[in-house]
Image (spheres, helix red, strand yellow):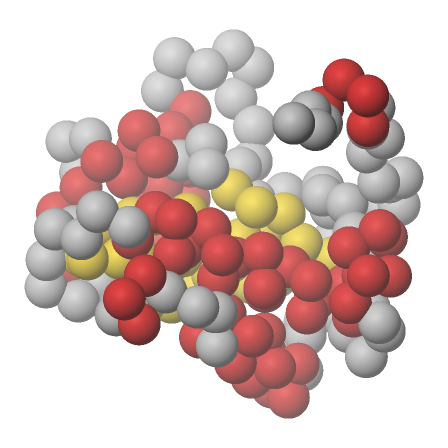
Length: 173
């Protein structure tokens, strides 16, 4: 695996994937990276649902998300795997903990030569009228709700990492 600082520097959002699926070993590495993420008060409340990119539930989430979208688009860019992270709905820090876990997953993916895309755009679909249906279909633990998702697979397209302006984005006091 590459140096973590190299992975941070090289990582960018992948919006095009090959049909080739990550191996079982690669997936286990990504899951381990997500589950090893620190959590507030060491609650370890983040749950990861691994969804095959061909699973019909993704099309249902996409249809719900795309209601009224012009033009509609595939939210996971046909990645071979989507990981949906849920957290304890009653724990104030679940969203932060899920964000830390998903970044660990993305950096591990980069280190393994895989692409990733952090997905937040399905929040309204996941918390709307079909919330309970999606929660059951995705096997969220009782009392858990959607936090964030990540698409993973081999990159079919290349994209340069974003640039930043240190002077604009950082204040020293």
